[in-house]
Image (cartoon, rainbow, N blue to C red; front, top):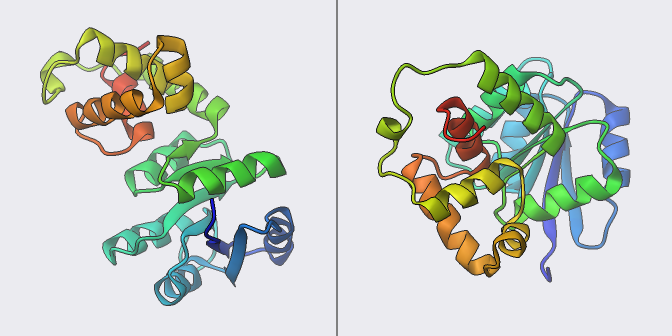
Length: 218
């Protein structure tokens, strides 16, 4: 990755912002601003146009999820990673439905945080994998649809597309899926895009959530 990634940090605690800035002190990342609440984050994102925003969820005045929705309504191109202490299914689903590109917990390691920023900056969606699996299992046990899952699809999934979807739900990258199925990462990417289209979403994580909720994958 040759170009620098411009990054905005939004958190109402200065110590957290300082810690995140320290964790992200890497030559490929440039922290261009810090915001103490969601309204500041929205205004700074409009002005600075960062590649990535690290957005705390619980902040005064305007919370992180509302700030995310404001950014999307304004059609800002910044990719947003929601950051929280709370393992909340509601927070995760609201963040994803609001257009977040990532969702991580505050106990994340420096290496994992850097990887999340790099991935999201490159256009990949990323969610804390263990938390996502917990949420998906809860959705599977709690939500049953009376309508046939296949009837909810734009088109039926092929056997190969189902293989891809199952591995997407497990949180595997295109390369990892390719290694499992003996396909190139580019081929997997093409299949994944088709799967997301048939599920009516353009986001891998939302596709995984929909697949579980509709009973396509267990």
